[in-house]
Image (tube, rainbow, N blue to C red; front, side, top):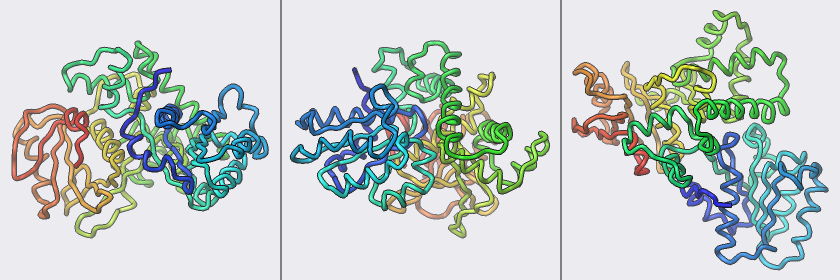
Length: 409
């Protein structure tokens, strides 16, 4: 089987391939490509000379392994490898299918000589329990759906046509989404149906099996509300008020719990407001962004693109994929889209617009917040498509080219 290589993730993981002291945990929304990524790692190990008998690959959701449900049964699948000399490579896909898997994983990590990779249900792996049960000896790699760059590359990999107009191709990406499997379906209706099935699968596998919901219909109303209002500045109070107008009455604690469930299942991510003067996050003001834009279009029949929140969502996910922390920016009374911080504690400021060429007032509105920032960190104006211009040291670039070239901020 031909595998599409996600080089951006493989590059991050390679340094841990032969580390038997740290468990490698691949997380990400359902169907984003975690299993394929693990298979790519196996392929690279074999290409580097690792023999088949040194690799144990357990796909617990597939035929042949679905009966493995207990720690003893899981251990029995692995223990024969103890007789093999040298480093062994253990891959467990959908590890949450075994209740109590942690004791087995910890056992083989402590045994030494096993480089361990696992994937599984995100609501479990990200709930905070894993850090305790794996005794802190793991490193997480968060896998996202396809970026615009990888979307184009995978289309070429599959022999599909790529629009030579970057802006037009970006619109295709927005409407189709970034789930790898969606590229197998030529019709838009089928792509939407697939995205809808992913939402249903997350609900049934990640959520219902793990948490108790007193009122499923209310939870679904909260889920749909947040998805339909992605990119909008909001607060718990605002969401409660809007839901009440729709006839949905829930407590603040319940709403907060539902939002946490959606975040743990990787459907949404929360982006809090960051005030540059105080250097503090304002926890009562935030925006929510989607793991994949297809979630929005799967719930709506309207194909019109609201470029404001859509471009924010794309850049937000792209910045996070590069390892940046992202906050909604404020300088005094002026707001700009994002302030980002690199792992090296360096900042950058980002403003986004579909275009700045419609009229002079639009240009002024987009540039003014960035021009009010007096420090020397980089400032970016990102647009969907516009002639590049220079103004007061602000870096203007179009989003399709920026992501396609995998540029850092």
